[in-house]
Image (cartoon, rainbow, N blue to C red; front, side):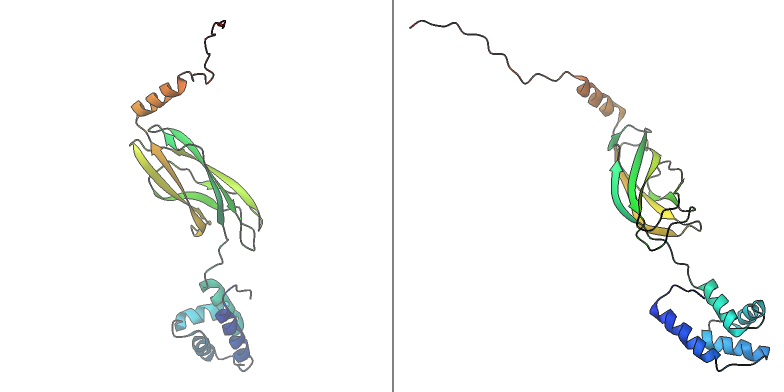
Length: 211
């Protein structure tokens, strides 16, 4: 059995193996009692009987199957490296893009089932994006196509990289934008279209005066 847990879990495994060497019985009721004693009072007799029967009444195999089933799986690791916001001020309902540079900081590669979803904040019309498998120690850039809210003001959305089962991986990603009114956006565009005055001033020539 390969269980990735804390040192406490490792100690439990060692203790179980030592106790297995002292147990040699084919009595099913006794095997159920032994499994309950080893795993604690939270394990009822029906559950113990199920895993023993599934393991052909082999106590060690039954306990390994039970621990594999009940221990939470190890999640991949992810850290945010940089956020690349394409737009900071947008018009109501405008489409924009947000990119993040993220890294696999764990010891194992990401499976191809990881996806980026919106997890909170202002709804921004985000469609989940699946990420390709990423080896440990590598980085990648993920981009979402978003839609600005229709209400002027500052809005923020939060995003999670999740597993196939929906478990969050690593840091929370976020984006913050300012939605300007259409009148304000039109004024900004008009100001941007104005010609820029030249910085070189022409000085009118002066007549030479005779002394």
